[in-house]
Amino acid sequence: MNHNVKAYIAMTIAMTTVGSSFVVGKWITESFPVFLASGLRYGLASALMLIILFLIEKPFPKLTGKHVATLLLLSLTGVFGFSVLLLYGVQYTSATESGIITSTSPMVISLISFFFLRERLSRKQWLGILFAVCGISMIHLFTSETHEIVPGVPRWVGTLLIFGAVLGEALFTIFGKVLSGKLSPLTIATFASLIGFFMFLPFAIVEALAFDFTKPTLSDWMYIVYYAIVITVIGFVLWYYGVSKVPVSTSAVFTGVIAVSALVLSYIFLHERFEWGHLIGIVLVLSGIFITSKQADKGRSLQDNTKTELQA
Image (cartoon, rainbow, N blue to C red; front, side, top):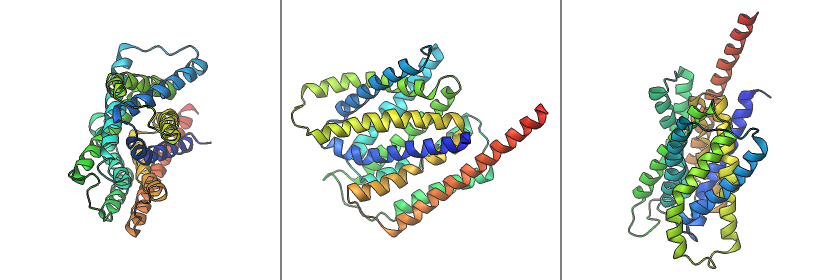
């Protein structure tokens, strides 16, 4: 299978799991405090990934000072920051709107990569990003719910918190791209989770001391397990695999899948309202992904042909 196609499939699955985090996150915050839930999630995920890393990576990867510094920034922004802002944000706005706001990351990631990584964007890539952003905006415009989720707290508070998570998601991708040529996707995901766990640990311990662990049901604990295994272990590894194979501008557009996933799953599991404008938005997001991925395929094909000619 073409490397680009594998990367697209991996990134689509990864961003679908991120979309599901808005639904699961709402359920989790009904039973667990934010820092304790995140500490449990990353503790379990780190343990699993370390075992997998020991079994697969031979020899065990060695980290340089620069690797550690980049991993610290990655974990601070895309693990600690993203998780805290997301779990607090979903308490003050709907899961649908949270997914929509988070999916503005195609624009944020592309602009960061354009200005700081010096990645050149073609007209079709800009067009794909525009389609994705317009689609996300369309979904947002047709969201008619305006009442406060938490009495006394306006919905714009949730919007700001979720947009802060967008910045964390963008930097998560950028720093991951910087490391992708030096460390394997599994290594990046493992150490990102492990560092994130230690960042959460002091706050998680404080909340654990006052928490009644007999209160959560079996379903509540399974949400934590899902968050750890599916969203963190599987999602992180697949995302960094995809990021390692394609330009940041291409991977950025695939974050538009978050909006589609969050919208559909919120409708199915949380019974949030679905409107026809949402369908238009989904079509635009998917169109943006298609345009950008086709452009990336074309660029990769031309590059491969050039290498073949030079070798001949």
